[in-house]
Structure formats: structure tokens, C-alpha cells
Length: 343
Image (tube, rainbow, N blue to C red; front, side, top):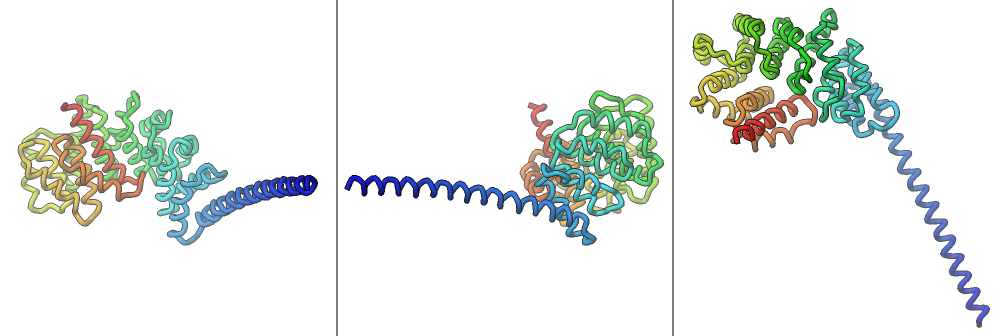
């Protein structure tokens, strides 16, 4: 009986021992199997990034942001910033924006290539945290006109200006580059130059003279959208310009009208009908109009506080790191900051 008991105990011990070995082997196989599919997925996405099907390539670029730690992923996205590869370059911008600081050194290097530079600056602008040294590089580039002869120079200048609007001048002087951008051949660059001057507080006599002449240049064009948007940021206090805006209202498109309303409200904050008009345009069916309305409310600040819940909803519905989403987030932050300052 004693011998039988010992045999039984030994049998149980052996069974438990081999069960443990089997469990360990099963776990190792499971871990091995879980790694391999992820690596296969990354390789599949890298292959799709080279696809001639633009939708497939764009989807791959955005998905690769989730796998940035894998070798070759960030480098592949950097190569996809090439301005000649539209619209894949836009998806790569958004992906690198999501990756953030780990992509910083790669993006800084990409600013040395004229075909990659614009997208690299965009990603450095809208990533969640400031990348040390980016301001120095971008302001030097803008002031020196490094890419003035490039076919992409307007896009590069514009993204440099957006960087200054988001992150400031980091204690450096960007006056030369910003003021020269007031006279870029592209109107969207000129209006962002006006915004940058307003945000940075560059207001000496020479700059003021340039601002006035730039508004006059806008007024000479058929599309006064840019004139009114620039004017809202520059806050002209001359009665003749306000009269010019008021006389233009019957002929304005929705986007022109909302910036005219912003000018009028900033000039006289008792004109609450103008503020309400802008708030109503947050629900305009055309997204560019709604995004402009959000930007205008951010410029107006605390008086637009009633629009904060709607702005939060809009931001949640947009792609993180995209221009529209960042515009709305900036508007929210501006309104909240002015409320805090007023308290």
C-alpha cells in the first residue's frame, strides 16, 4: 500500500511538471505568434505606402503612426512628405504630427530638403509639444528667404508663419521674414503674415506702415475675403475702412461676411448681432465656412464663450493634428485664456 501511494504521488508530480512545461511552451508560441503578425502588418502598411492607389497609400500613411517604434516607419513617412506626392504628403503630415516628439529630429533634417520642407514644418507646428530648436531653424529659414527660389516657396513660407502663430517667436526676431510675406503672391500667405504680426505684437512704425499698405493691396482684389480676414487680425481703427466694410456687406459671400462681422464686432462690441451671426455659422454646411467661424470666435475671445460647447463638439469630430482641428483647438484655448485673464 505504501509503495502504491508513493507511485501515485510521483505520477502526480510528473504530470504537474510536464503540464508546466507544456504551459510555458504554449505561452512562448503565443508570444511568438503575436509578434510576427504585428511585424507582418507593419511591412504590409509600408508596402501599401508605395501603392499607386492613392486611397490605399493615404490610409497606410495614417495607420503607420500607430507603429512608429518599428524600424523604418518614421523614415518612410518622412519620404512621403514630398510635395510632389499629393495627397499622400498630407496623410504623412498628419501621421507625423500624431507621432510627435519622437519624429522631431527626422523632421528637422527634412527641412533641409525643399520637397520635404513644407510638410516637415507643418508637422513640427501641430505636434502636441514644442520641439527644441525648431523655432530657431524656421525663423532663420523665413528671414533669410532660404527657399525663395523654390517652386514650393509660398507653401513653405505659409507653414513657417503658421509655426509662429502657434508657438511664437521663441524670443527671436522674425520681423523681416514675416513682413516680407505680407507681399507674397499668394493671398493665403499674406493673410497669415498679417495674423503672425498680430499674434507676435510686432507694431513699430515701419511695420504699421506695411500693414496699412497690405490692407490696401487686399482691397484692390475682387475676393475681399482675405482683406477682411487680415483686417480682423490687424484691427484697423480708421472709420473709412469700417465704412468700406459696411458698404460691401450686401455683396459678400458667407466667408467674407463672417470676417466682416468680426471686424465690425471688434471695432464695436455692442454689435452683438455680428457676434451671433458668426456663432450661427459654426453650423454652416460647408466646412471651410464653419472653420473660419471658429477661428473668428477665437480672435474675438471671451465674448464668444457661449460657443465653447459647440467648438468642443466640432474639434472631436475632426482628424487629430489636421489644420481644421488645430484651428478649433486654438480658438478654444484663446477664448478660455481671455476668460481667465478677465477674472
